[in-house]
Length: 298
Ligand code: MN
Image 1 (cartoon, rainbow, N blue to C red):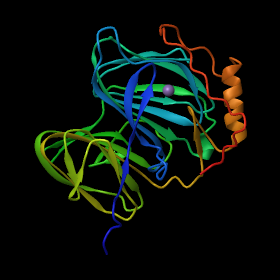
Image 2: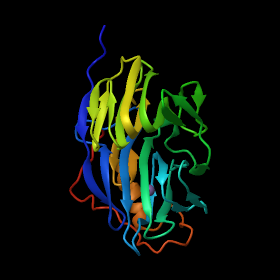
Image 3: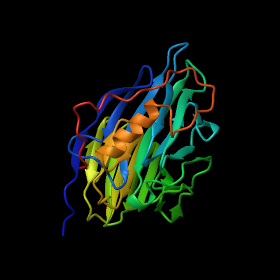
Image 4: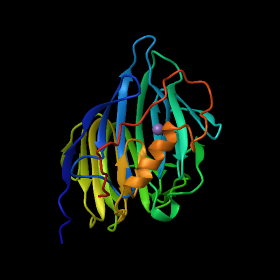
């Protein structure tokens, strides 16, 4: 029996913070999620001009985990629990918003190089109102796989389990190669997967994957061949199809229009989300108006 064919989705270019260009692969119109992964921004690699950097001012989140995989450069995270944490290359910052948290993100140095993947993970119904939390993971397990260095960022793969605390069956793996590499990764047939090239060029099951595209693999696959002929980097996400309709609006993940409206009202009123630890000069973000909008889950 042959596995269902992969599907290509283009990413779109967007701006985060004041002027940081990113490629947004999730959500897109036809593909909202891969497992519980509901947001994927590929940021850079970018060399900021002198005096420039990424500066994202205070903003709130609910119903999700923000997951930052740092490849080059350093970012300072500050949040309303009082955490201040520099994230360095090879590390993951994981912020569990639950019922509500607010944070800022700033380049540690302006005029530097930055390269990162910024992801969100939707919290399942039973966990969406949990207490907020923040963790920095400085060490993640790695293995050699046919010339790739595989780093398990979340979940389990290649006999390794990531320490990152997640709340649904999912996996995230970074594959980095300094030269030609070729491996077959065992997959879980009940998972769907999505792959994005972060650097160079790679081939997945014989499909060339250009920068800026998400290659989606429906459930039913038991292995995936990852090949490159020169230095490359690939991010592979997977998970059991989430199964709960959600709505992603601004920085919120929720189930109903009313939850979103309440979160926006609370943020605008300076309630619920606490005060972000001082240190960022970036301006506070405000949500777009919901007047005349009725959000529906999908
Ligand atoms: Mn954020």
